[in-house]
Image 1 (cartoon, rainbow, N blue to C red):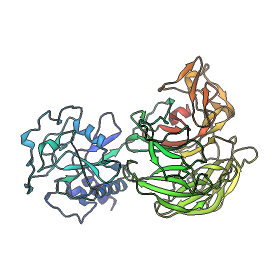
Image 2 (cartoon, rainbow, N blue to C red):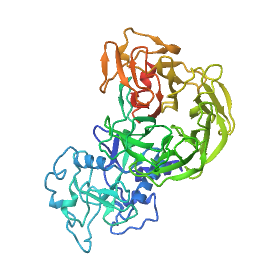
Image 3 (cartoon, one colour):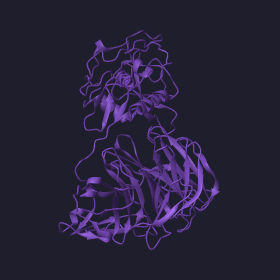
Length: 565
């Protein structure tokens, strides 16, 4: 049976081409009938009849569902290309109207005119030479779905490449069209991309840069206090960051803003989510294995953040458009102040931590969904510490660390062996944190547990290789070019030696650098024994192994090799 499935997949998985200078691979041809029908055997062939013809009569939703199915079958990550990825691949380094030049060879035309009755043509893929990157039929064969919405309404999806029975000008590399996502046509098919994990082996630490940037327009509300981030890794290594912006944290003016990180640059702030005249405290993002993004947020019934409802939105296109908000915790009250860092357990449950109350010693509530986020249940239990970070251990135990509720003068550790319905508590080896500080706890792709928190000398990272029993590696998160010796130590034996890969604009004065941490952090000095003193943290990891840590204003990038060095 295994051999049969392997043979079947070898026939239906399209041949993929590496895109230069990218962690992406794209299918060399459009998805064919035989490849698509392994997913949907009931698909009826219309106009496109041969096994190796490009599949047509497929909606955007069906094309995306094929990507999800193929990802599950192979254990890899497939999706539709973004519009930018599609055009980059189509051009293959050219700047002309077509990758063939300013003219498209007539020998490759397929009834290129506006025909009232569509002229039968062959849609067999790879009949003509590929472009310089090895991609076939980027102009003409069938119009191709892209991941992106056409505009902010999300009502239409972008298509590129043009099709048979269509005027030649629509086949240009820069030509854009759109269609309703439910629309099926004999003109339209798709190709796919795979996100490939390309890890950086050498130690990397990059100078922090701000991700909270003023908006490019005067219509986006942007206030003095920007705080409480959440972050998600997107396709192709991009990031989406969200945070609240307000004049006062108990204000009705509070909005949730967003910024995108693409090719090393953060975009200016834009509006992400706002219920008019309501407090919006607490946000989280979670990317599921099929690429779906979940956005969680608290929504107040007035200006305070105690009585919040819990809402959920979904995005199928990397956060470019979102569903209407669904109230999954509809009662306004405590236990709904969302904390960044939800996780998916080994049995597929989604776990979302929320502050159990507005006070610093009120602890953390746990909400659980066993059906992909459709329905939710509050376990009714309370973890030690607010703003808790949570991980699942290899034996299924849940472990969390939080702020407040200190035990023996140390940060509290909570453990549950029954899915979060009851907890045991103990002192962790770490110092407690306080006002203006939020930790993060995460399992890295390489296996170790990562803690990012604060000690007397500032922001540090720690690693556990034995499921939280011990934390032998602790390191101050600082610019290691500032070191004057081969090895120095800071609080809690945090070694501060390492390799630096710098970037960004900072002020340097002798052996220190000055940064603006924003929010409650303000200006601070980073040197060999001092790091950012406070901030609310959020973390994610991209396929290249880079760990992306956001504080209240700054974006840090480093990898496991740097921590371990």
